[in-house]
Amino acid sequence: MAQLGLGLAALGRPGYINLGHGVDLKHNHSIAAIRNNAFEVLNQAWDSGIRHFDVARSYGRAEEFISQWVRDRSISPQEITISSKWGYTYTAAWKVQTPEGVDHEVKRHELPVLQRQYAASFNHLGDHLKLYQIHSATEESGVLDNHDVLQFLDRIRQTGMTIGLSVSGPRQSKTIEKALTIKFNGERLFQSVQATWNLLERSAELALRNAHDLGLQVIIKESVANGRLTSRNQAPEFRSRKNQLNQLASRYQTTIDAISIAAALNQPWAGTVLSGATTAEQIVSNNSATTLQWDKELESQTSLIAEPPTDYWKSRSRLPWN
Ligand SMILES: NC(=O)c1ccc[n+]([C@@H]2O[C@H](COP(=O)([O-])OP(=O)(O)OC[C@H]3O[C@@H](n4cnc5c(N)ncnc54)[C@H](OP(=O)(O)O)[C@@H]3O)[C@@H](O)[C@H]2O)c1
Image 1 (tube, rainbow, N blue to C red):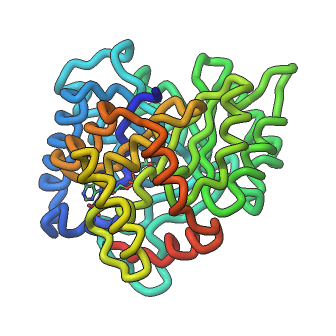
Image 2: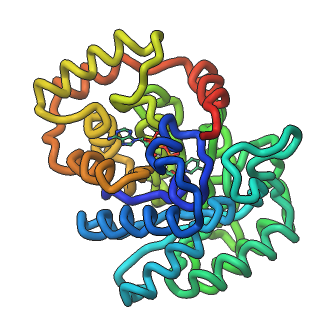
């Protein structure tokens, strides 16, 4: 079974797209309140046995928070894996809603951005940083054809850093396949891939299995579909699937989120599944997936609720920042 990790996309800034983000943060957006909440979730995660934490330059103050937290707790680099990403710049200026025409984060997969962001990530995280990823590589972003960027990543790899990429969108598989072909001196540049896989969006499965078989570490993100695979989802079009999941949850004395995360943890090609918990209670609930006995009944009942990838990503793009 894969291990559970914790991603800090929802913990480092006031705004995010997960369904009840604002409610979870009690709409208290002072830096101190957001830091305190992040530390509470980090402490609960650590106490639950979680040892992989995933951040990005664009997750507000996430890198700063986790670097302070590891220092406060005297956690050595040997005890923990921290991964980060470059490519998006945080532009929301600590606001939940940005003014019209201003994005929450701006994507630029160019060499000067990589150089600037790697220096900043390393400055915050030092030897605790073990994995550096391209943030949401896509075919359109052109990053996998940018020789200067790839060469610089290879130089970082030669310092002992693991190089990875995260992928998003309905064509995740194509991007993964392309990434697997990139080599320097006969060695694959990417040793890790982070992709969206959940009970609603399973389209990257074959590409991820292939990546795993070639020796890459596979990290699953968005395993509860940004909260859509939790009790919080009230969308009418999800009602019948929610009823089905609720029945399963009550039969197995667990929760919908635990079933969804257990489905990911039990994929034979998965190495790490990221929880995206915003509260300590959610970590406890998400972590109960690690003790849920996955069986054929769960496998077959949960295999029927996937959506066409284009529908899934369209719905995701409509999730409001809150
Ligand atoms: N492109 C990329 O590289 C990329 C993109 C996305 C994510 N990621 C990584 O993956 C991590 C996880 O992704 P994610 O947070 O976007 O998606 P996720 O894991 O699918 O969703 C997490 C959200 O689900 C809700 N949730 C979880 N357990 C719950 C429970 N028991 N009851 C009610 N709601 C619950 C919470 O949202 P509420 O606040 O609504 O309660 C939580 O923030 C991120 O932190 C990040 O590290 C990477």
